[in-house]
Length: 449
Ligand code: ADP
Ligand code: ADP
Ligand code: MG
Image (cartoon, rainbow, N blue to C red; front, side):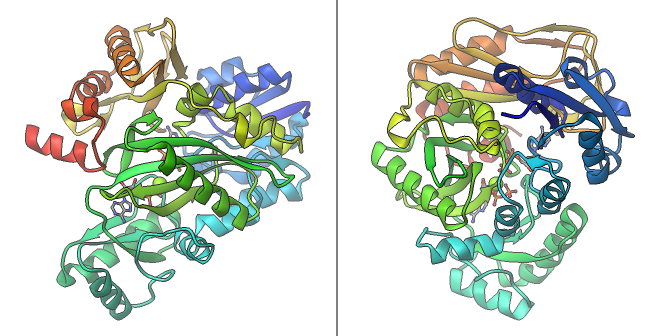
C-alpha cells in the first residue's frame, strides 16, 4: 500500500478521499487554491499545499503545479477525484512520467474512452448495443444531413470530448441542423478545446441507467449494479437512486455483462461507469463510459456495502479486488440528493456567501458527503454542489420516507440552496411511482410556469 497520496481535487470528493485514506492508514496531502485556504479538505488533510490562484486553470487544472506538489510532499500516487484533471489522459501520462501512480485507469483507456464518438465505435465492434447515429465523428454538413435523415429527426449533435451535459444540441428538422452543429462546435471548442461532434438519434423519454464497474490490474472485472440517474435538468443529474426502479434482475444481469465486456474490450482497470439509455421496450444502448469515480458513487456503496474509493486506491497499488462477482449483493435501496448552493427560483443561479448556521440530518441510514461547515464562506469560483445527502432504506418506500425527513431537517442558513426543490421532487407522484424518464423534470418545471 502507498504511504502517501496527493488529492488533486477540492470540495466533498476531496474530503471523501481523505476519509478513505484514513481507513487505509495512508497519509494524505491536499492541494488548494488561494480561494480555498479555509475549505474543509485543506483543513483536515494531513498536509496541504497551495497550488495557485482561484482560477481553475491556474490551480486545480494546472498539471505542472499539481505534479510539483506531489513530488515536493513525496506522494507516491495522485487521486484525481471527479471533474478537473480526472479524465485528462495527458495528466495521467504526466503522472506516469514522473513516477507517480495515477489512481484511475491507464492513460490509454482514458484517451480511448474520452473520445465519445470513437468509444461508441469500439463498443459497437465488441457487440455492445449503441445508440444509432454517425459512425464516429461527422466531418461535413452534407454527411451530417445524410445521417440525420437515416436516423430520422429529432437527432442530437454531441461534442466528442463532452461532459457535464455540455455541448449537446437537439435538432428537430433539417433546417436547424447546420446552425446547431455550428453552435455545438463552438460550445465544445470553448469548454473542451476540441470542436469534434457526432450525431445520435434522439431517444424519446429514455431512462438514464448506468452500471458501476470495478476492475483490478490482474484482469478481474466486476459490476456493482446500476444507478438510475433519470432525474435531470439540462442533461445534468439532480437525484440518483440504486437500484433503478425500472430494472429487473434479468435486465441488470444483461446490462452488467455488457458493461464488463465493454471494460474488458479496452483493458480497463480501476473504477468506471458505463452509461446507458433504456427505452420504453427496456432495450438498452451504450452512451458513454466515464473513466473516474462518479458524483453519485455513494448510493452504490450503500446498497453493495463495497467502498469504491478504498478499492480505487487498492487497485492502483496493484492489489487484487477483495470480492468477486458472486459476492456482490444489492441490499435495500439508496437515494442521493445533490445539495447545491443555488436559487431554484432564480433559474438556479449560484448563491455564494457565508453559511451562518448549519444543521445536517442524521440517524440510521443517513449519510452526508459534504465539504462545508458553519462559518464557511462559499466562493463563486467553483461548482455549486456543497453536499450530498444519501439515504439507505430497506426498500424504496422506506428510502423515500427517510429522504423526505432528512431533507426537512437539513438547515443551511446564509446562502440559498435547492433543498426545498429536492423535497418538492421527491413528493411528486411520478417519482414515488418510480416510472419517471429523463424528460420528467423538464416537463414538470414547464407545467409549473
Ligand atoms: P456524468 O458522469 O454524466 O458526466 P456527473 O454529474 O457525474 O455526470 O459529472 C459531470 C461532469 O462534471 C464530470 O466531468 C464531473 O467530474 C464534473 N462534476 C460534476 N459535479 C462536479 C462538482 N461538484 N465539482 C466538480 N466537478 C463536477
Ligand atoms: P455527458 O458526457 O455530458 O454526460 P451524455 O452523453 O452522458 O453526456 O448525455 C447526458 C444526458 O443527455 C443523458 O443522461 C440523457 O439525459 C441525455 N441524452 C444523451 N444522449 C441522448 C440521446 N441520444 N437521446 C436522448 N437523450 C440523450
Ligand atoms: Mg454522461
